[in-house]
Length: 187
Image (cartoon, rainbow, N blue to C red):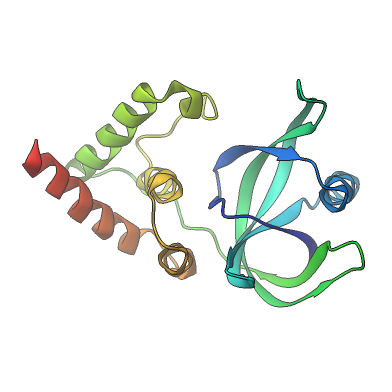
């Protein structure tokens, strides 16, 4: 599969929602291509000047003209992918030959996971501007909870890429148990 690529430091996983401002002509073209094809585009991180290996196919769910005259789009992560190879066109827009990856399966919250889900709920309550992206949050699905936490946490690019490469949410859940349990001990 070929997709136009949007390299950003934004870390978006399947089910994740974000708002982007489009101001460069190459990314205006990306939006047009993504809307015309219905396939969306590839959102991928950069490490320095190098594109990272893993990304997320995103679709545009809404768009608006912002007060500064720029185009604003709302995107939703659909599925992870691996970039096999990529090329850059004359205007700077990159295209990638990608292989789609299987999404993490939904997982019911266990009693031992409730602190992780409750901490995310409390964070969303504290930052309602972020929570508005998720009008129907799924705190009972630990995969969804882990993915939202990974998007928010200030992790290094290589750490985020490592979690993205996993076939399920278990490594993320273990990591979150360590972080949140440490935080709860301090309180």
